[in-house]
Image (cartoon, rainbow, N blue to C red; front, top):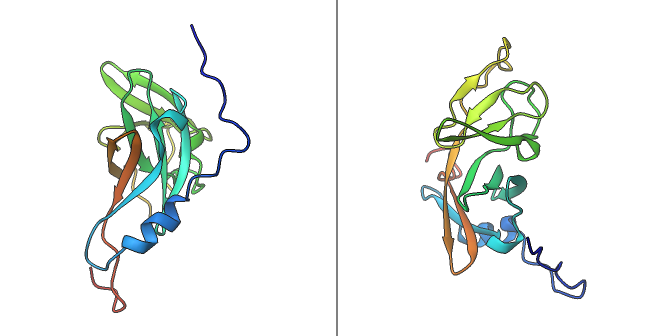
Length: 153
């Protein structure tokens, strides 16, 4: 197995997802933001990104697919899903929370194993799943629309 050489230290850092997304964020419209290049994602490990005001956990799996879910763990209330353990239940890719080990589908966000715990008050047991596209080697994540100044979407 050949391991690619690390990027040179002198390489200019990529713009942050929040900086890219803020310029295109319009009330009432979903926001599509560049998160990073596909090559910067390590298979079976996650990364956290801020898209406008939404924390997302992005995963590149061993099969080459890329998935994004909310970074907030509904059972611990901590933003840690990007540090979870990837796996599968049959053909369904999953992520296990690093704190209490609940298992979630990366396709639907549904909690498949609760570990006999209840979510933090006010949070759903299902992770929000975000649309991901890889175009010209760049990973884009789309988050829901932003409320306008009156709180309407």
